[in-house]
Image (cartoon, rainbow, N blue to C red; front, side, top):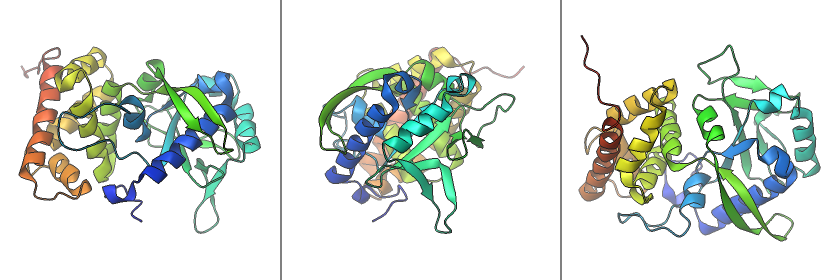
Length: 288
């Protein structure tokens, strides 16, 4: 199975069901108080936001994800609740992942049935750049990333119902990154790694959200003074530049449709529409 995020074939109804069960189990392990200091920010976001929505193009339902990306608020550090969090995870039989060498990866844990949970966190002052590993406890850490402060501050709560890893039917309200900020985070991910699914996730949201890409762009413009937003916009301008550009080629490749000019054209059109919506609020500033 391809676990690199470069082919939609790796994503099945069974894999997304496992991830949802893990998410429900994780929510119960953390409890309502700690869950409120987190937000889902990874590939599970489109599945939760658009479970019954129909994209404006022919890409079908979202393929899902293979893991859970959970951002933690810095308040967990400031209030010294991190020991409690690690203990709750341990009681629920979550555990740090290990490299092939046997070294623990404290920023990535696994559920009892093997689904990865990647912990993330905004940069901790005085660090502003992110992309570091922030130690939390001897067994728990988080990868730092710019822009997560916005996702945490503006999380929306989405009901998730299903079966947890103990076979119980449960419903929990899950804090989820809103669509316009998810676009920002996925653009930042595209800037710092080469994974076809990042472009696919970003495009899927642009093609599915009720606000249409122009509306999402205008919504993100409300945060234009945040440095992570400027970086994300620059990335979208760079990578959604032509039907042969990175975003269009990555989406087509991920979906197993290389050379599909119609799909590539849609990717380009939706990306440019998003930028037009953003620029309708934040015009390009000409030098001089």
